[in-house]
Length: 280
Image 1: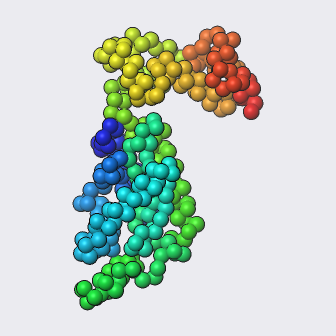
Image 2 (image 1 turned 30 degrees about the vertical axis):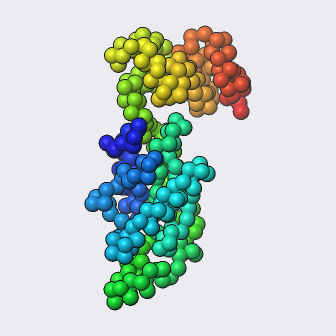
Image 3 (image 1 turned 135 degrees about the horizontal axis):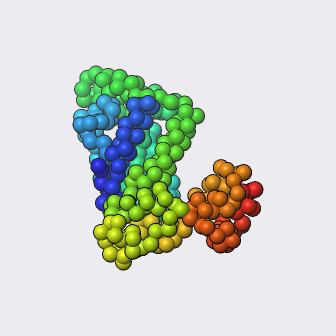
């Protein structure tokens, strides 16, 4: 289990990153909000040989770190992915990672070359040759993966979808999420059963006020609002997925035995009736 200040990161996240790296030969690094590397470690999945030679042998580690932090701040300022070519000719990207509007850290896929933008000769090839008398750096530079711009766009788009999947499936969540996870799972597993705050507090061995506070802190909604929103979102999805099912049946499946009341709360949430939503 990985951690970033106030958040817990599921082991599945590192597994997803590892699979992406194995498939596309693109290393993914996860940094905390302070820019400290969380994943991977230098032993389990080190930088490519070309970058190791630059950082360790040529003494450019601080220059690389400074650029990383500069681009993290640029991405944070824009609130979106920033793609750039580093001083060594490698293409990298950085994405600010938010969970419930709180910065968790930064994710950086990189250490590959753009067929259109990367220079054919490493910017540090001559410096290496002068200091070491060989072309070992250039040889490692040429071994780094090269992609067309169209391929890079596809790879980065796929990466962004993976990050959305990770966030939406709570694979990165606030540490307090673990305390109320049994309650959230009950709400999701049994949407037709309205859960009282008192019963929820007994499920996790906490006071009702503590459960209420944690729900607001972790989900951004009150305990009651979370239930209502989840049930209505589920109903909306079923209205689309099951066009022949009566509205009353779908309402009952998410805990509303009064179709008229269901229609009122649904309209309040979506600004239209269930039937109108289904026909959109």
